[in-house]
Amino acid sequence: MEKALRGKISLQKITAVGLLVALGVVAAPLSLPVGAARVFPVQHAINVIAGATLGPWWAVVAALLTSTIRNLMGWGTLLAYPGSIFGAFLAGFLFSLFKHKIWAALGELLGTGFIGAVVAFPVARWLLDSPVLAYTFIVPFSLSSIAGIMIGLILLTLLEKSGYLKLK
Image (cartoon, rainbow, N blue to C red; front, side):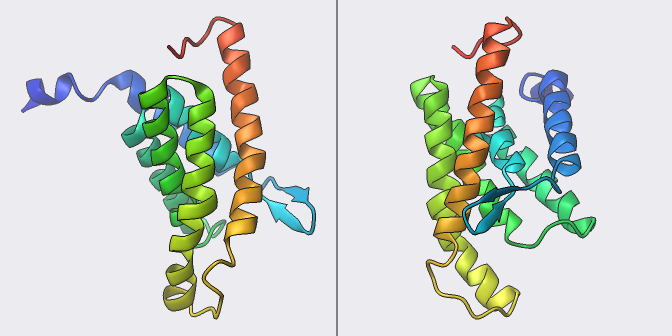
């Protein structure tokens, strides 16, 4: 069993996930004003970075852990799950298909801004007992995602130019 897992789970990826989760938890209270909304872009930036560097499944692990810790600390809501998991997966999946960071960004936007927003509706309606419309979350989830995507793309570009990261 140990031999079978050794090739699939690397200490380097576990460490990277741990660092991204720590960053996501510590920076979770940071927000930016975007129009009439306040957005929390750190998780979206992490989704883009994790998707492009670690792949879809490790990005999902990072999103799940970050959302769980934020909720346990009282810094998040159940909406953090649909708001991060789909974006993390699609960021990694589209990056793995097309090998360019812009695809990780588009995956984050589609996964969080649309799919996550639509999935958030039943979470808000039934689990949080909040009467909302089905498409209520698309605009704020997309605004937050766009802000985080810009941060994530800037960080990936800086890491590439400094020689610390090769995405291809």
